[in-house]
Image (cartoon, rainbow, N blue to C red):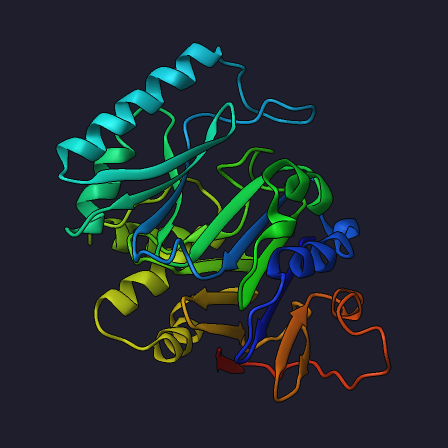
Length: 314
C-alpha cells in the first residue's frame, strides 16, 4: 500500500513544496519507508537545465544500501563534472545537498539521451530529474523528514506530484522510491499506486528502443513508457490513453510535465483516488485526508471513473 498526491494551481505560483509536503505527510500511514517530490517551478530564470542527481545511496536506518566513504562520492562527482565538460556543457551553479545528492544548473544544447547515458556511466550515479522547471527529490523517511533535509518547503511553483512508499517488491533505497523521471524527456515525472502484470514484456520492448531503467519497480515503466510516447510525437493525453490499453494490471497514476498534470485510472478501478476540482485548483490524493490539508472546509470531491484519463493545464 502506497500513497500518491498531486495538485495544480491555475495561473498562480504558490509555496508548492510546503503544500505537497503536508499532503504527503497526511498519507504517511500508507507508506513510511520513503517519500518523493516532483515540484514544478520557474527554474533558474536563465533557461538552463536543472539536474538533480545522486552518486550513492542513503544508508539511514532501514535502508538496504551499502555504506560508502565520502571520498568515493567526491570522486564520482568529479567524474560527472568532467563528463559534462567533455559533452560540451557547462555548470552554471551547483549545490551539494547531502553527501550523495546534488543539484546542478547546466547549459547544454545537444541530445539529452546521449548526455544522460554518459553521466550515468559513472558508478552508482543516477539522474533523478533533468528539465527546465522540474525538481525531483526522493529519499528515505516521511515527507517532513525529506522536506527538511532538502529544504523543499521553500520551493515555489505551480504544480507537483508526490509519493509515500511502503516497500514491498524492492528494497528501501532511493533507487526504488518514487517519483520517476520520464527518461530522457525533460520535465516529465510519474507516481503510481498499483501493480503492472506485463512489466517485463513492456520493459524489454522499451529497452530495445534505447530507453533505460534504473530499478525493477513497475512504476518506473509508466514514466519511461510515456516519455517514449511523447518523444515519438504523441500528446500527453494520447499517451496516457494508450497506456490503459497496453499496460495490464490494477493501477492509478499521476503524471506531470512542465505545464500540465494528468491522472489515469485503469479499467478495473481497484486503486483509490479522490479528486477535487475548482476553476483555480485541482488536488488529488489516495485519500481525501490529503486534500483536506489544503482545504479544511467542507468541499465536494469525487472518485474518478474506471478507465478515466484527465489532463489539466497551469
